[in-house]
Image 1 (cartoon, rainbow, N blue to C red):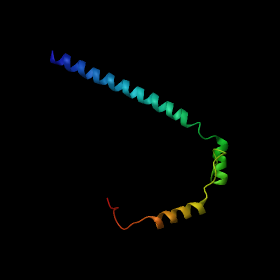
Image 2 (tube, rainbow, N blue to C red):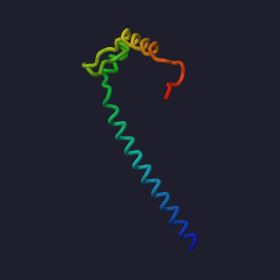
Image 3 (cartoon, helix red, strand yellow):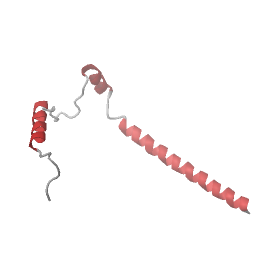
Image 4 (cartoon, one colour):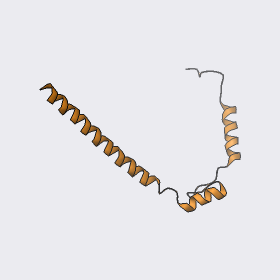
Length: 86
């Protein structure tokens, strides 16, 4: 009797593991299928040639001078003496 219960329990664990593994592989395949459409061969060639790619035409390039100025302003204006009084 114990052998039968042990065999049924072990079988249930094996089937559950198989189902979970199958679902995980389906999810992984769907994710990979979606992510492969992000870059085309032309985009990869542009990255190899120029070293960068512009995906959204409305994106503005970063203004490094303005970023440096804002960073300086932040560090200079902040009080770093200690915790603020309550």
